[in-house]
Length: 65
Image (cartoon, rainbow, N blue to C red):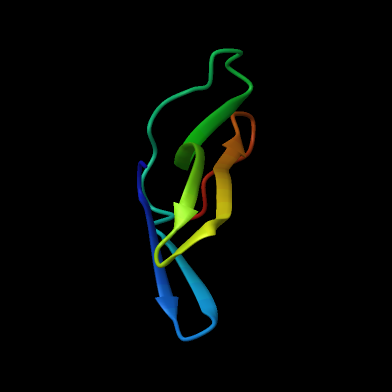
């Protein structure tokens, strides 16, 4: 995983992403990666539950300050 933290809080899954980070353009160059699980990953303590996440912004969008 890159810039993603998965944490259980009872029956809730908390996903934390630092939106100030960027990891460069996608292969197509249309988006800028912010966070990814790099495929599907098991939820901590719930092996039967799986999450696949990509967080990105469009390359043409202006970054908020």
